[in-house]
Image 1 (cartoon, one colour):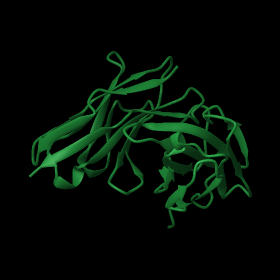
Image 2 (cartoon, chains in turn blue, cyan; image 1 turned 30 degrees about the horizontal axis):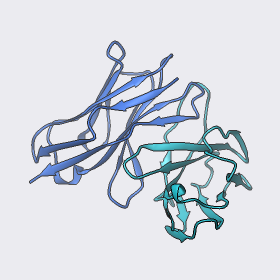
Image 3 (cartoon, each protein chain N blue to C red; image 1 turned 120 degrees about the horizontal axis):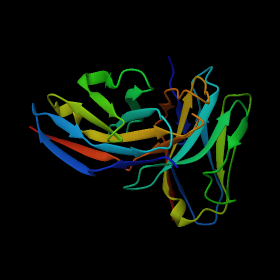
Image 4 (tube, rainbow over the protein chains, first blue to last red; image 1 turned 90 degrees about the horizontal axis):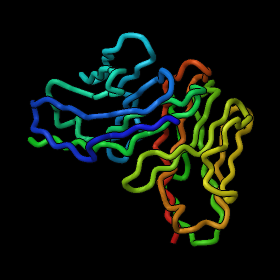
Amino acid sequence: AQSVTQLDSHVSVSEGTPVLLRCNYSSSYSPSLFWYVQHPNKGLQLLLKYTSAATLVKGINGFEAEFKKSETSFHLTKPSAHMSDAAEYFCVVSGNTGNQFYFGTGTSLTVIP
Amino acid sequence: GAGVSQSPSNKVTEKGKDVELRCDPISGHTALYWYRQSLGQGLEFLIYFQGNSAPDKSGLPSDRFSAERTGGSVSTLTIQRTQQEDSAVYLCASSSTTNQFLSYEQYFGPGTRLTVT
């Protein structure tokens, strides 16, 4: 069965410092992996996705994530946090039929000015 | 272009009443998904449509929940005899297609916040 674990429910960083949001997945095959962001009172927006191409994936707003099969991880990073990055972030793994998606419980990112 | 829309944005209902939640996907998107997001939880998959058919209903929590999709477009999620534990945000998403071997990006609506009193 597929599952996702987001290791931190809350992360707080200072503006201008790096961001690291951790995600580990469990899958019996080669999955597709996604990161979505949800700003308050807004719909979820795709940040980036991994679908078995390059293991380092670049997304919008300066975010990137690296797929590490040996560690079953797909951590999200950004070199320098902006105030506008404050939001809820979800790591997602696809099911084995490509049409079902398993969401982590989310990581709330706070950016301190 | 227009994104995924959902209505109503907020719904307060009394325990035991039925509710209908509506989702208008992006035009031309063949795949449509319903999720439930409870406070402090991740998204819980409910049901998936490919066209008008629902090959995967495994996430529906009970037989009080049902969904349909007509004309390959609008979908309605119905909850009968609502219970307080049904209180959550119900999210709809659509994608251009779906494939057994490739997962496509989902576009999410803003959600319907359901409160059962």
